Image 1 (cartoon, rainbow, N blue to C red):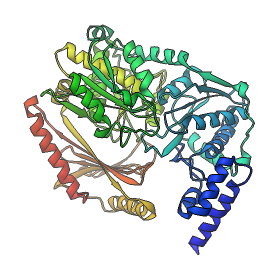
Image 2: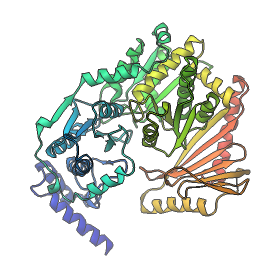
Image 3: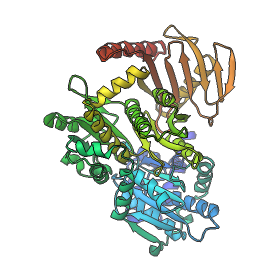
Image 4: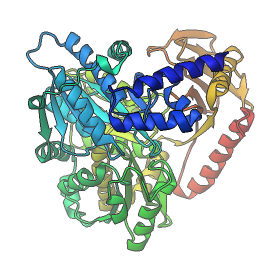
Length: 581
């Protein structure tokens, strides 16, 4: 009965999409599915693609549960309605629209621009693909009320997405996220969308904005004279077919670097990402061609950005002269350490500076800040929460930098999202600074560990697909809450933070306190030996994530490999105790 009812609803929805309200190509594709592929028809129409707190993300194709010009247009109509409510007192409302390299991204961006203009909203539409952080910058620079970026970040090629930003340049958060969702859900049909665009309201942004943005990036350089002396640093850079292709090299050159080596086949913008299995710089395979080139030319640094240009993965030479991939926690530590050291050496630390990180990112960042007298904030997972802290402290405190373990970093406050253009520029500068001091980036990392302690982090994701998988993930979280472990790997649990209940339990002193963060389905277990385990279901994928952090004292670099093995063994034992392996 349930299946019959579902199929009936699917067929009714499909019939609507075969009406004259939709273009000929769409009608024909729906008709083909209806006659030839019942399973795909069901997947495409069994529900509406949900507009969540991060916007839209889904597989491209025809149907209510797919990314296409109609679902994009309906979402934009809901956003338009909310903007007109919130900014009714303004003489004009302006929205920046940008897109990445993915298939159909330009079409979706133009569809969004057309709907906005039809609603009497002025649109600043980028002439072509641009990095996500430049959209954040443009919102602030042109005093806009919102922004839209068409991107699915590092998802597989079949996907696309739609992210909305607010007037501070940050992704939408409470209360706007929930309120926009309400407006979007009111749009029941494509007939509810204003479809007569006012082309006079659409202005094209191009090179002039790129120049202004990269000039601002250049101002973040702490040691331009060192960059000049090391301008021939060998840098291999790849955008992995994405939006960093133009602006990252432009910013690197403005920082003073002249010796940038490209991977020609990956400089081609292509939403099919033909040279990689996944365009994700967290995956070693995505850097394979860049690493090969680096070995050929004996490069000092390798950098790869994701398709929308907000995250970066890097490789540097270790003390054996071999290229070594660094993880997001390590890069964030290098960035924070360098900037704080530079601020201090130039007399710029006044006691009103701060950094920010997510709760699952290494606590090494806080140790570095504490030692320098710099304030630090921990926020929920998602760079939009870092942007919110910057906004809350505007005019009172100075933001130095922020980061998250998933390869996203930001310095300065003229952008309010993670920014790989800024990150690549500063990572190159840190490499030059290290070389000036006859060291490598890897040597600097060892120095950091010797000073503050060696933190080793690891992430395990357990995939649980479908309705049963979601129920299993929910039960896992419930079991951890209702029957928390007393020990993990035979080490006593001394503190538990439950971000859903908002309670921090100090088990040593039998005390409870409130957590000063929004509610979130995350648990953290702190052990007596300085280990930390964080558990949270993914907000975008059918998986539950386990973050592990262990710590040891590092006395000299000769112990590094031994300690690394010892700490990795500790993490393995923790995983076994939790039943993950």
